[in-house]
Length: 563
Image 1 (cartoon, one colour):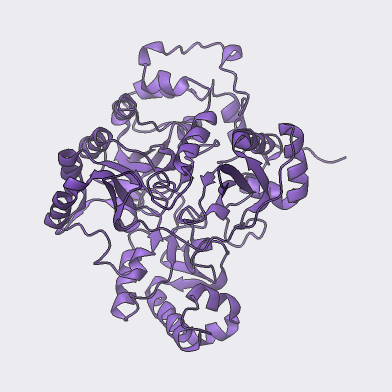
Image 2 (cartoon, rainbow, N blue to C red; image 1 turned 60 degrees about the vertical axis):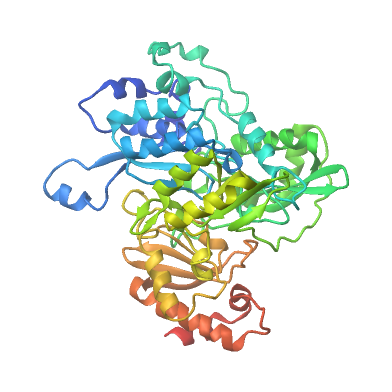
């Protein structure tokens, strides 16, 4: 008789959370405590809130037998990257000065993160966000996270489909039904701590225990794979045929893994099939329901939908989906994805007399540093010219819907604050990306955002800045900066040591492979430079990309070059 596996603790927490309410309200009222208890920490994630501590201070505090320096991170939800109104931007800018650390962090899922928030300021901060139509609900937790899309698909001249609108529709249709978030953070007077558990809002999509793990959806475009569509749990790729719109559906992507645990691995999504425009939401909900019912709930390391696809195969998954939605999917139409839109610089919009401007934000951190007054300069520009903004999946920023008569004025203000859209930065830096990692992320085992810029500095000093090579760094194998689909992936293995992965392609459609383990951070620039110079001497053709070269070259040969 097969032994029944025990559900992980998170499943019990979700089921007994009173519709994602937990006892968060009661703990908020406890002014003596600077943290939440274990169970509420898990429920808070559904509200877009993570409890963290300053890991730079952790050892000293433990030695002094003092409590950790706790703070909170809040993540907003911005389907498709925005639109963020001028009023919303200025409120968020004010929040960073008032209640959080003085930076705004753009994420790889087109959200904002606020870091360094004290428990006593949580209620007022989240309340202020919601009063300005900004939410954090569903930005984290075992639920559909922020749906990403090309943020300029409705304004770029050669784009024929508004992916951002579909992202917003998906977000609306997959939002949890529980009103607990709004009771706790928005309408405190409606709190009922004696709520009848049998009368908690019914949620036909998520039911009582939501999903086994987080769930990511992306709406792609053939002309722009900046969202890395093959890394999503569900990837949706529009196929335009005259006036008709069809949608290729991909399923089972995901990049997180664990070092030296072969049962965990990054995986590219499978091509599932194609549906018509009015069927997309039904297909999305059907896929989510399969993961809800069959995803692993006994092992968090196996709980992502990619493992269900790996175990079932795409044919079994498709058959189950078609049973649930009541119609057959059409055959997937092959489309090559060989373009990435970096958005940088000034561009005409399809709307007459309007322009947009893409601005490079290194690793997504909006701050004033030295002579570059990025944060304060943006606030002044947005306020003076009433500019809307959008976020990208590469952690950059776009100013949109700019009137022609304001272009020169904005250019002058950008120059005045030493904000460069992209011209001063090397190709290598523009293509690089890192997650926040230390000191705030509890999962990081090595640096990422604080280290990658100096690594790029070294490579630039070696004369490699002009190379169009995608380097991504993550502080742990959860891979939030998506290094497994980069040409060079650097993933933290332990303090100051990284595993190097090579052979992904520039366009995010191929996984890279493990090249070297436990490389000291001081050796990374040397080893990467040796690899790049070997590629330059031995590539098949002038235009052969670095990732393609590494993918076809024997790694033993490459290892001899860097020892």
